[in-house]
Image (tube, rainbow over all chains, first blue to last red; front, side, top):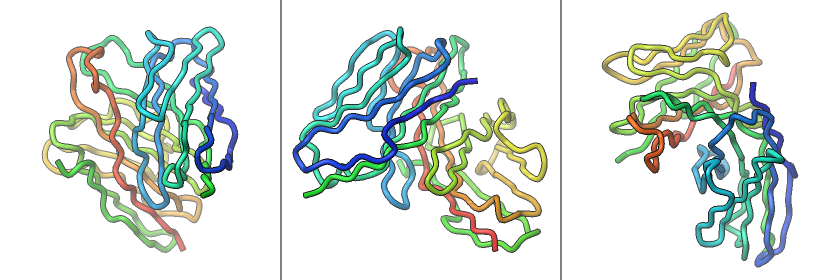
Amino acid sequence: GENVEQHPSTLSVQEGDSAVIKCTYSDSASNYFPWYKQELGKGPQLIIDIRSNVGEKKDQRIAVTLNKTAKHFSLHITETQPEDSAVYFCAASIIPMNNNAGNMLTFGGGTRLMVKP
Amino acid sequence: NAGVMQNPRHLVRRRGQEARLRCSPMKGHSHVYWYRQLPEEGLKFMVYLQKENIIDESGMPKERFSAEFPKEGPSILRIQQVVRGDSAAYFCASSPFSQRRTISGANVLTFGAGSRLTVL
């Protein structure tokens, strides 16, 4: 089955700096790569996702890059703010061609991001 | 849209008791997934259900754990004869039905706030 590794496990940055979190996956058939943000005591919230037919996607201060050959993808957060402090999870899955098919995500171990004011 | 609703948010059980966790998916969503999160760890897939059907339960322990998603009502994750190792946060997610996987938003999982089970 799929295995997703995530690094680093903790990341501390100064407010305004950039943060980069990296993930690798094992199954070359994986074609969907979301990133979730989890705040203390809450459920994961989707912040951005990318599908295997593109190499990069950006949404304001957040961007994700995908290297299918190397089987790794990264989350980039620019101009970090204290409210970006949370645990971030990457995930990977295979979205099949079947109609009405599900999406079973395999998650990385998480990165605790701390943004110091 | 109230989102994915889970209850109870916190549940305390003694060893040997039963725990029942409930999940109501987002309106219009027909796929439900259960994940378990141990302290300081990532989320582990347990089971994927559609209405009245278990599609994939490869991540769910064979004994003591069961899940259902009836025609009417919420999805239920049931843990019988709980042990201390069952203490965790259990998250439910839902996704919409889509005939075409390329539609933007299709297959995107929305998570609930979780149910935190403590076994004494």
